[in-house]
Length: 558
Image 1 (cartoon, rainbow, N blue to C red):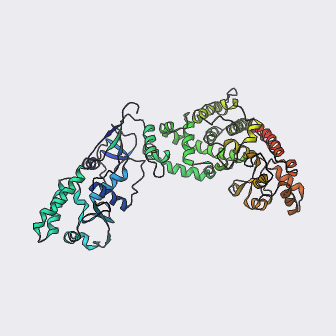
Image 2 (image 1 turned 180 degrees about the vertical axis):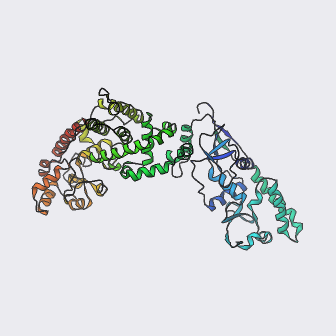
Image 3 (image 1 turned 120 degrees about the vertical axis):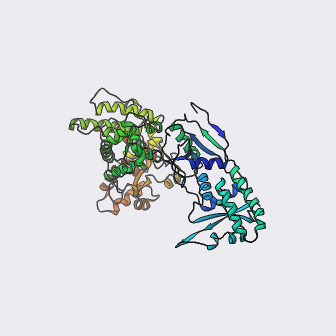
């Protein structure tokens, strides 16, 4: 760790509980709440009693104001000056604190004198508690004599400290009743268990106070792989709401209400945070997001919402309909940022901006610009495009405009677009530019029906295998999005056959079939000849023509 060394230390359970009680150990507020079952709590208590390891904790040392807003362990006092934030170990510390304090209203835990675990260790019982009126059931839970008859001792008596020690003596005296000669015998056993709890060692790793917030979050992400990972939005939202007095959840809800289509392109929280970074001239990565000026984010929120509205409208117009077919996510926050600068532009300037953004987006899809170091690359491009769109500097040229486009051979080799393949998906989007009319029902593709379309092999896989084709069937150039019903109708028919079937199935004849193929940028000639190699070659020419137009900022349609 830069500026300090991570240390491995030991700490007794008694000292952990003291730190929780005094408020020295707290949780960063981004941590989710307790989630352990009662059986997990029971197992943890047995581990302590039998001196079995329960794993190491992970803390961040704190000096002064903590880097993340703290909250106390569940049911622990809220005061005190925090000196450590618990990054890993919340469930274990919470379970120990609450069980020893009697903090579970519907459950109590007892150590058994008589029963053993399956490994011959001391056993703990978990008893469900119900309350009716002012009574707790089962009634024997409140009777020390009946508890001792069952060989059970409340775990709360094992809480380290003098107060619980006194309660333990009083409880065993009450439990023994007339058999006071047994008090010493039972008390010695309880004191032995109390000593085990008090001295039980819980090791921990400590990050130095000089650790940056970004490093803390990276560590937290890596050590919390067993549950649903926290998003960066989860991590920062509590601190931001406290700092600026605005609820990010409320802001996002208003954005979703205004621009519901934004959610089709990815996680809205992620899109917003990356857009906010770009709008503050920062790289859209975690360290930059953690250092955002949130007062500025709130002040410019209307601009961000306006940019999102225009960006979604633009994406839909370009037939980029959802995230499942999006070639690369990087362009989405960039488009929102750049469209946010378009308010107040004259019609001519707005037309220039649209051309620039079309050129930018399609180059993002077709070139390798964002294949590596995408955060650095996109801020460079956004800066130059901002000069053009917002500031009117016609001499500004973003680096992405200088990147080479793929060759015709690259297009011919691009894989199946259902996979996360940037170039394959870019080719698929070209096939939507003409409306991608369904080959059977004649309906155009829209944001409303795109999720019902299926990835169809124009030259069916089975047909190509039977004809022993040396060219793979799983190519982007061999794909069309059609309805599931049409896909089932065509199945593995050779192209000439299903073209004839389509012509015979409707009264509009062959011309309509040819038109529908054209809306997918599908050349009819090779289909009529069942010539797959020629089809791939000819369609690659069509896609090349489209690519050259779109990456120059010109609209294109087959």
